[in-house]
Image 1 (tube, rainbow, N blue to C red):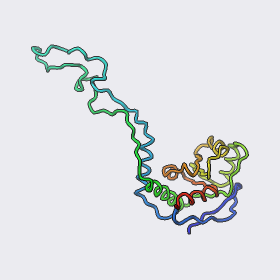
Image 2 (tube, rainbow, N blue to C red):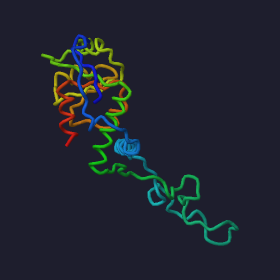
Image 3 (cartoon, rainbow, N blue to C red):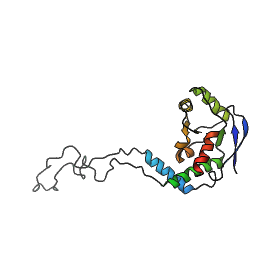
Image 4 (spheres, rainbow, N blue to C red):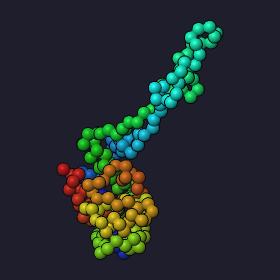
Length: 207
């Protein structure tokens, strides 16, 4: 089984943790691509819009009479062939999000975790307890661990003190195990787990 070092908050190695081979195994690049594209599609605002000839202001009067001018017949200056006219097949507001099967999502997350383990970018912290939100204290812990930004800090459950301590640090994102997604895992340079969070990940994704 693959192993990673276990550190305390002072950056001292206090042991090793074995990774579950059912989770930290082979990397499926196809499902990684599917999950990332789906994630980015869901982030699109989809507010782009153009106006058709019916929506452009003006153009109600026929520009010139039908016959006798020697020019082509026209019924409106807002026709798509006129400058300032409507757009025929332009974009309109839409929702780009879509879903992929649950098994594919889970496999993508496991593949992303496996890729980070293979690159040696996973750190495990023995314990992280903050009595109150302290950004300086969180920065000290990350510096002791030598965590290179961007950092994804994964906790077993949502912890307000941890979240508030890390939110003002540039390049640091905090998420509970339930909020893990493929994109965030791949986008970080250091994947930092608390020991409880790693156990929770193995419990959830080994089913």
